[in-house]
Length: 248
Ligand SMILES: NC(=O)c1ccc[n+]([C@@H]2O[C@H](COP(=O)([O-])OP(=O)(O)OC[C@H]3O[C@@H](n4cnc5c(N)ncnc54)[C@H](OP(=O)(O)O)[C@@H]3O)[C@@H](O)[C@H]2O)c1
Image 1 (cartoon, rainbow, N blue to C red):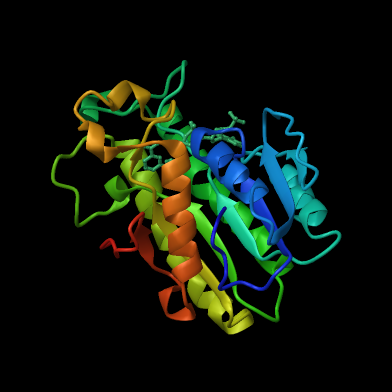
Image 2: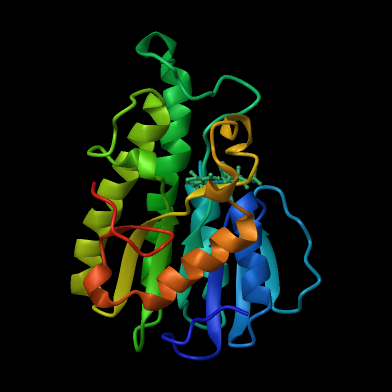
């Protein structure tokens, strides 16, 4: 059971990346919440849920037409209360892996990481923000990462992923400023989930203490609490799983 008591009732929520480790955990938490009326779940590979509230559709962050269509579908019955963008990439089976040094930077891989982690979520914002309801609190939250903090970068490495998340944070802040003028009750934030046991972090977990590695369900619930506690004063901020602010 989630706690989204600061929102209106009969919520219409959207999860982008609903087939990922965190995305699936958000979806399951929302399906168990009786205050949520409808859930629109988007990914490239669809897992079929039997929950009557959930409607699945295809989205590819590298294809703006699919994002536009997703925004239209999600708001066809009622306006949207909450959007969670839980997509992202750190590595794949082909050419993308976090760089240990500058010598490993590959422009094609860097472009792909920025395309998915930076441009994709902002295209989601472009098409989904106009579909938010206007008469009560709404939230647009993109999952970022603490390693995207420029001030907090003490170790170097992971150039593409760090840069993609730093740029995402800048764009979220920029969008939040514009959105404040257009729709004063909407809150736009970047969130850091902590280190979470998903396929994204799996190859890099050996130096993470057991107590610092969250289960996806716990991480989603932590972030839902943060989302519930957000007020308009938080718009444009970069917040961790415990609600603390992260410096840019
Ligand atoms: N896990 C961690 O420790 C951790 C830490 C800090 C931040 N984060 C952030 O949290 C977010 C979720 O990560 P996760 O751990 O849940 O990773 P994950 O299990 O790998 O899920 C990421 C999802 O992103 C989707 N995706 C990738 N490229 C896409 C594209 N072009 N179009 C549509 N969807 C695309 C994938 O969708 P498909 O199913 O369609 O392939 C996948 O389901 C990411 O932004 C990540 O950077 C995670």
